[in-house]
Image (cartoon, helix red, strand yellow):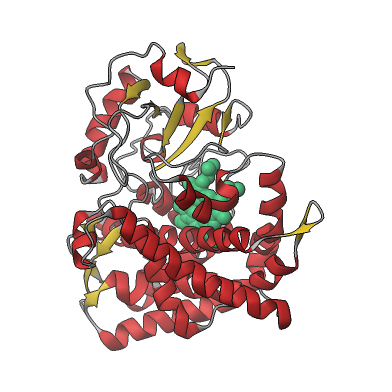
Length: 426
Ligand code: HEM
């Protein structure tokens, strides 16, 4: 079998002129990036690129294949034997120890992936999430009341980050007075490529910022785990410390990585969907009117459109396990294959008029939660319910709000908004 090293030296085409590896590309807005993705989808659906810029500069490292069409993203996602996750799922290079400490079953393959996912998966089923609906609804109500009391300000801090943070840490059993700091560290872990974020924290080296954030998550996570060993409760942390996989308890490292994965996955994604949706509802006034006019009936389709529009997770990677082909392009065993969900979500083969935000779009087979297959977002029902409930309150109590220009994070992984001014226009 060919190894990664062989693949790196094997015959590869020239790097595509659209440079998906540069941070400059990821500093652009979705609309600007789409100007590059559209011709790629139409003319060059599988292209070869140099190693990505980001956390660890590795200009001589092996490059990657870019997969930009909806159909191909689905194919790669649903063929885990051919395109595995166990050799890493991040687009950019980062030290092995850091990835191991933070990705848990996201970067594993069957059978261990399925076993670990099952440990907490039961808490995220539609039935379980329906049980949480009242809590989500009360929380959303409180957050919007606080916004109304506070008035204009930064929508990200006042609203977007609060509901996902409260829900994921309540489920894990982490107390309210720790939640803010935990969510901040979860944010920082995916923000290290952004020079402005590093400067704000007085740190030059992205790895230093990531390591600090990781410690800030793992410390309280493991303290909670220790506590649950002696004082079991009805929460996810207790499930983790009591769980056995292949007859063995999880190690502290495994519990720590689990906690980091749930922290990152549970916080940023939903937060950023709320932020991007507010921008869309400010830009597409007719769509806001349609949604408000039929709020209960239209919220479910509107939420799907919000996730498509936001594409809060921009990329995930797989590694080819054997020599294969994608659309006639030879892919060697060991090659990195990166899926660009934002592009899949604007593919005209699947979405009519994809650059319009349409709250009634149905069907809407977006790839915001991934392209299907075993790693499909475990929190999709939780996220959908949170989005429905927060928008129900916002559009009822602040129907005339407007947001200004988003301050966007530079990242090739999350489509994040750092801050966003809101005026309630009451
Ligand atoms: C709008 C919000 C969200 C979006 C857009 C989103 C997106 C994604 C994507 C793209 C993946 C990878 C799918 C793949 O590789 O095929 C994923 C995986 C995952 N998500 Fe979400 N997510 C969201 C909310 C959440 C929430 C609230 C949680 C709760 C903890 C969560 C937990 C997870 C976990 C644990 C995985 C890894 C699943 C696995 O590897 O088996 N996500 N998500």
